[in-house]
Image (tube, rainbow, N blue to C red; front, side, top):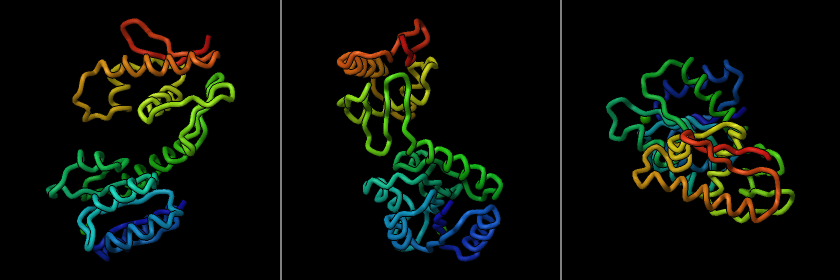
Length: 222
Ligand code: CA
């Protein structure tokens, strides 16, 4: 597992590198935002720890540029307690998690491992019944025929597949598919479940989204 540590304070960078190497990771260090972006765009990392206040380009800009370029490597942002930005910003711009400075290395490593597991899951094909979803090619097929989904429908399908067989409440679906900051009409969930059902039914098969009265929805097999 290869980690890019982005940190401009030399002592902190050396300390992090030492700790992560001791945990069995391969570590590269970038001391400014531009170098971090260049290295991360070149690829090959399983996760990135990203400081915010950096010379040349701040951590937010680095994260935003990476996501814009379609790089979906897990990013753990290291935020300062009384910094200019807060954690909500970190998640908004596409970071996967954040950790507030000062942090313990034990916690940092635990968070990194959690992100790495998520990263692996993110690239593995998900299947249920006759449905198959590839996160890499962003495609869903049923019994071999591809379903044409919008990005939001895809995200919803992905979340249903991760949780196949489990009942998901509207609140859970909203939080995971539309984001915790979503301020629109929560009925959007019903609308999109409706779209997805229509598309699923356009190809005859077994998997379907069932309404569980008073509780939510569930991907199930007839
Ligand atoms: Ca810094």
